[in-house]
Image (cartoon, rainbow, N blue to C red; front, top):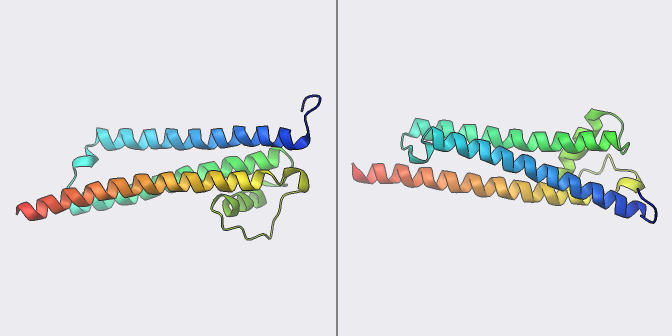
Length: 151
């Protein structure tokens, strides 16, 4: 922290960096996924087995992206001394990111501003994933429906 900066401003600047890093991971994860979908022609798939495989793979990929983001926040909490040890930090981060918020582990007063920003970021990231998931599944259902109606 520089001269004249309050701890709150310092924490908020760190939060902004974490939000940016989280959303960057999400964007890269989406990019990798979309590249694979285009490369393997998944947008045009009509086979029920192929659609099933893609839906399962999509769900696993999105969960992996979210777990990486939760782990990043956990590492940040440990690095900043907000929580001791990766396991409780990962647990706290997961509960916060997903907005479950059990409340059995809480951040020290100096770090409290981090939790609501992680929760907001998690809500946004989950919403983005839901939108992508919905859009792709809708496309696959439309493809399958066209095949059924053309028979």
